[in-house]
Length: 215
Ligand code: ADP
Image 1 (cartoon, rainbow, N blue to C red):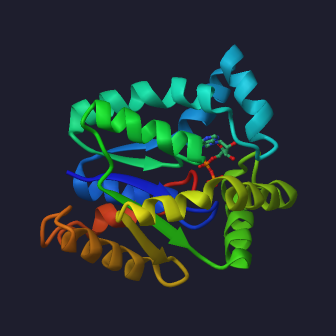
Image 2: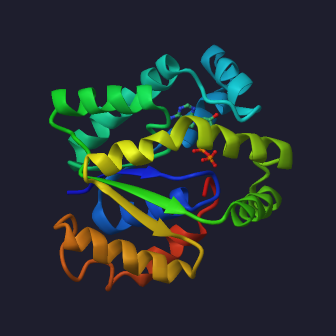
């Protein structure tokens, strides 16, 4: 079963490809951004606290993110035996803590998928999404800030996971079907997905590609 971390700048397609991978594998999709947005929508004290960070495009503090994510990862992994972690970890501190947590519970990640696209393409995709979904943090100035936060806080994780030998880098600056085929081949080559997976359920893939939400 796949236990995968999706690591990518905003707009590179981590939401879309996470949902698709989830449908292909039966692993649980755990999106930190979705969980945070749900908390904000509930209007709880925690949600109000979260919104002060997400509206500006700043990262939510590690403690807060762990209190929301850890129970979701544990129950999802128990239910399905795998996970697609979409948007977490995003700082070195989160990555180190996640590695410890994974080792303690025998839930260590077996691949990290790093999706890339040129910066102007990322911005233009997010602006398109803003028109579709109206997400509060999809304004040009907040998008630029989120990209800068990625470069400063999250980009160091690329080398960290490369050093651990589990990084798969894929460009998403090409048709989505090509990205999926590439992803599938590479997961199969690593023995993380069975051969033939992904060929018989094109309608699922379509749905995954068009679900609104984060990219
Ligand atoms: P995107 O990758 O497009 O920015 P996400 O939905 O993944 O969208 O995240 C939206 C926001 O949620 C981030 O800008 C940040 O404020 C917060 N967030 C999500 N994941 C994390 C995390 N692992 N650590 C801290 N903040 C997070």
